[in-house]
Length: 140
Ligand SMILES: [Fe+2]
Ligand SMILES: [Fe+2]
Image (tube, rainbow, N blue to C red; front, side, top):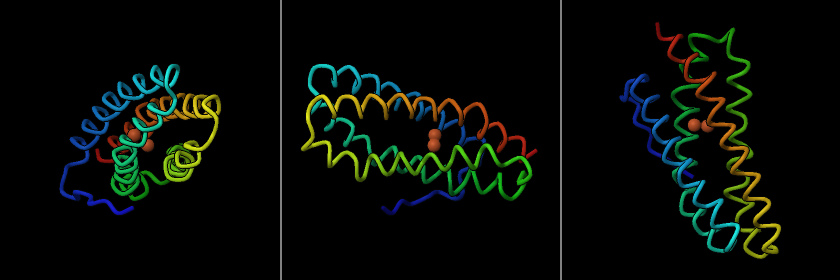
């Protein structure tokens, strides 16, 4: 998928925006998790609706936040690189996993969505603990 990235948005402001997106996405994911308990089909559709926003967010992190880290804090970048590589399972699940779940059992749908939501919450937390502070420090 192709996303327009605003290269002029200053990094500190961008990080604040990405954190706000974590909050709003987490709220949506909570709703999806609750819906999946009653109606996995509906939850699947809700997650599909959020998918472009989640993927765009990840592309922006790689294109802008990670670039700053690689340019200015490469020696400290290992953990951040690992966290950014998690975007692979994020896009794998959203682009290839979700369509497959449409024809899977309700039980499998629910358990795979539950796992994805748990893992992505952890991913957001790790970014806020490690990746974003490193990018800000690299700019000092
Ligand atoms: Fe991310
Ligand atoms: Fe993020």
